[in-house]
Amino acid sequence: MKVENIKDINKFFSVVDECKGKIELVTGEGDRLNLKSKLSQYVSLANIFSDGVIKELELVAYEPEDIDRLFKFMINQ
Image (cartoon, rainbow, N blue to C red; front, side, top):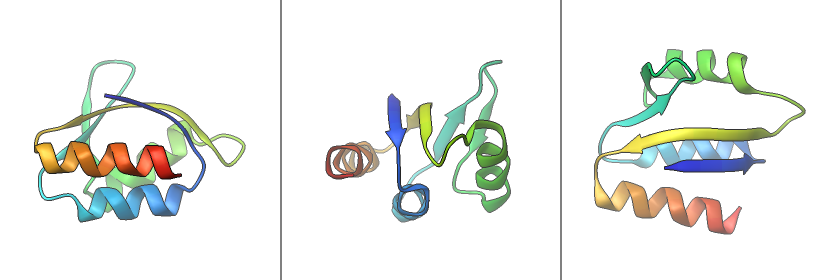
């Protein structure tokens, strides 16, 4: 799933932390980083953060309720 224009990064990572299953960030090279890991969160921020907004991320979520949680975040942000 692609998510775009994340304005509240803290809230985004809070939603990721609430997810039950694994949430992965797919890098431009095709690598997958576990976004539930704080280290991966910091690394991803360092690589993609610009102007206070994350413009686009490709995520993989494995649990249906996690997909719903992420969609709700994107709709309500």
